[in-house]
Image 1: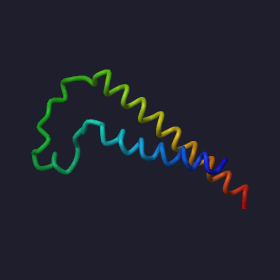
Image 2: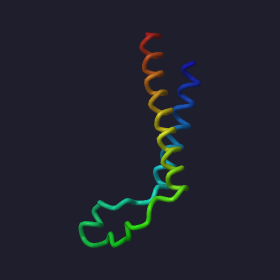
Image 3: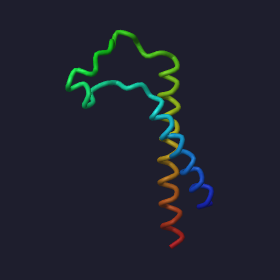
Image 4: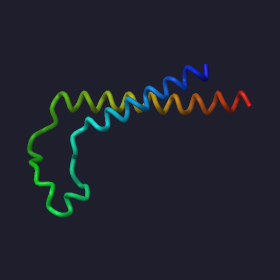
Length: 78
C-alpha cells in the first residue's frame, strides 16, 4: 500500500510541476515592478485556462491525500 501511494505521489508531483508551468503568468512579479508587465487584463479567462485550473486543483487534491495517507501509513507501521 505504501508503494502504491508513493508511486501516486511521485506521478502527481511531476504532473503538478508540468501543470503549474503551463499556466499563464498573472503579473505581480519582479518584472512588473520595473514596467515589464504591460499586458491587457481585459480579456477574461478562456475555457482552456479554466479547465487547466480545475485539473491543477484536482491534481493538488490527489497530492495532498497521498501525503496524508503516506504519513498515516508510515506512522502506523512504526
